[in-house]
Length: 131
Image 1 (spheres, rainbow, N blue to C red):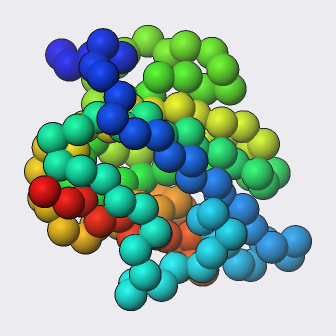
Image 2 (cartoon, helix red, strand yellow; image 1 turned 180 degrees about the horizontal axis):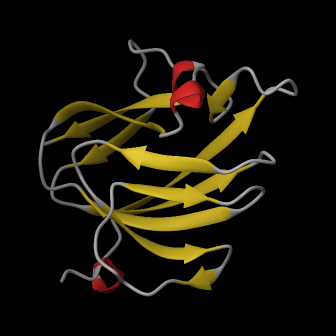
């Protein structure tokens, strides 16, 4: 089993989940989804450490396509490495730190909250993976 905690970190990013007061519009880094905009960039064959912040009062499920991640810490508490995941819950008003190795699929992909109505109401972003 891979342990990305032992890998060199090539970059760090912060992904912040927020929503409007009514809970009807959802955002990543204060932006609604736009398929023509690149929100994040990563380089193929590198490991990055991302902090996923949940600045709302409900759980959001972080999900990323094409490359799995390892949860390192939740609310500052180190996590046991149970292997790689593609979805993990970020607690209300909490943080989750992950490490992700970009092994496959250069080009555009997406990350989003895996709760369907949150994703559909704007909580999605485009990730460009460069060679």
